[in-house]
Image (cartoon, rainbow, N blue to C red; front, side, top):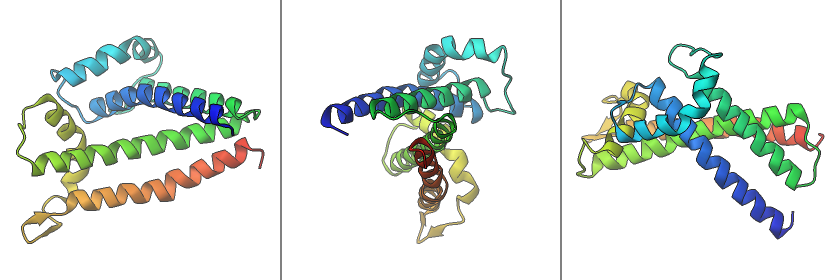
Length: 191
């Protein structure tokens, strides 16, 4: 790829990453039942509702998972993969696009949880206002991942459960998301 193509890919990844982040955070906020009165949740719902609301009439939630938001995330990732492949001058393979989009989605969720758990652990170490909207939002999304291990991984008065959760999330990125991504890339390149 030449420099202009690399710049185009960077811009596409940034733009689609910002959009996907909003829908991923909305999906996680609904799944973990974050406080709707939180201004961050209200922003997420207000921004994503025009796209999610029409699909919710057709797609019902599965338990607490907003399938409409998940479909939008997958469609955005598919569109991103198609545009990046088109920039590279390769004809997209349908199965390759789908596998690459699923890999990108899985990786995005894992990376989002990594950031949330890391920020949550930093906020818990610092003397921050627990009632600040950001602290409440991050806590409501990260706490359910750490809760099963809380108190079981203590050493010298320090709780290492966030470290164990982060290690598990990094391993999932390496062992699940990366092989899926490699398979999608091989399919896209005709291999």
